Image 1 (cartoon, rainbow, N blue to C red):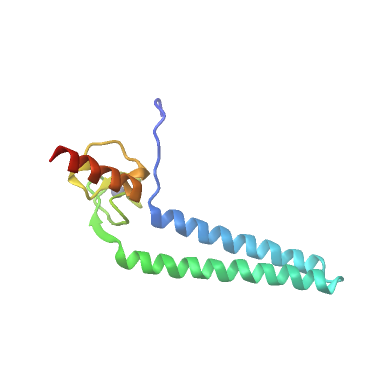
Image 2: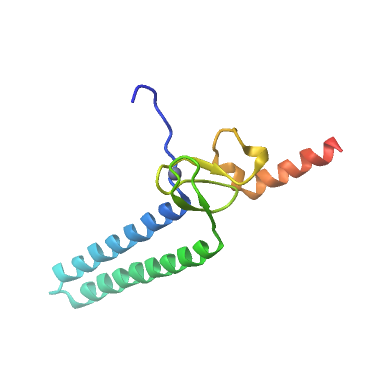
Length: 131
Ligand SMILES: [Zn+2]
């Protein structure tokens, strides 16, 4: 642990963490409903917001399911475990090794910007200039 190393987590894991957080927030808000059960309208409001958070989390889980079907399954070259990639660059789910599907990006420093539309557009423009 001598030099600081940036750790990237895979996108699917990040979204999963987000969905889990939403469930916790929902439960905490609903717990607020239990605490305020003497005030019916406040209790109802807490429950309603809590249920909204949990519904939203379910939607996010559903979205992860959809993303997973589009993700590219690969074997991580670093830890040799199967992982899934989303977009052109992503990190291994197990060892956080940055991975790329794009040969042009091989060896380059991992950056989320490689997945953005803006970067791709910029890359296209540069290629057009060279021709
Ligand atoms: Zn790995």
